[in-house]
Length: 122
Image (cartoon, rainbow, N blue to C red; front, top):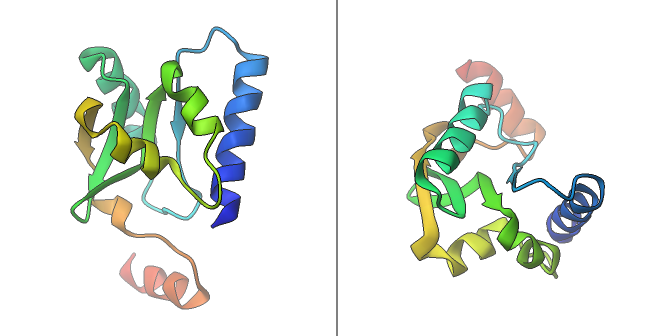
């Protein structure tokens, strides 16, 4: 779990350094197989339409990633530690979150068994 906070920290720091004018970033996991360009585009469009600082996906009765964070939250993402993930920032700012439905977000693949089950489902 420690890798989550360090990956977010390194990614946001690099983004801020390389593209200081960027106004938002999408944080996502590589183990959610049902991520699509449609979900990514919906996050971005919803951000521009709602002007909310966080647009998070809703699935399995929770809010989580993939999620879009405005640049005003970059400092909080950079200071995540000890295995904390972006979900900590989402929870802290729950009154500033706009959610989009992404039922497929509940599926993640962490083990060979889960991968085999996914193959059977698809």
